[in-house]
Image (tube, rainbow, N blue to C red; front, top):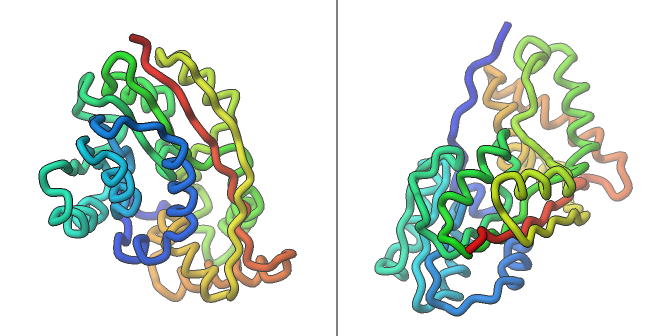
Length: 266
């Protein structure tokens, strides 16, 4: 039996509330940007708008367009930021593979988003098209062995009863590129001055409940929406939490981040 089609949506309120690791990673990425303050920037995969706010504060004379595939995320970000940045901000609900922009931005900023796009060749081509000549890409996403231990457990559990009918043939919804492949894809898309790197950024949580909630909101929502009942969803994340409880330290997410830096030629 094949499960239901996956959606484009996220739980924006829960993402905003629980996204401390993503926010911390994004702050570090943003701190590496050297901005004049008047640039026009695309926030590609803006999520609930936490980092969009910081980006705008670093662009006192600039303009930001936030793009996210989730209408829930866009609505949450608009509601959160519109009053403070009304004249310097806009949002678009769009797929990063079909961006409606041509030479519109001085730069593209993105964190924790590109690994949800399965075609990185098309993604990088679309991003280059959205940039003005000389524009920059400054991004980070999951990469390399990201969540390898958890993913192995998810694959094993998906082949067991009672989850097999729903998850047995479900392909992973992510692409975790290594740094060498990402570098070559960026160059093939027409970028120059390409620099890519991987870094290990594990996340530890304190309790089984916190681990399960994190899996529900950030990692496995595409898996869980295929399971037809709440009790099945709960059993799935509970079993994963039990397995993780024996790790050292317990309830650890083995995250790896892929850093991407590149420019469109003049």
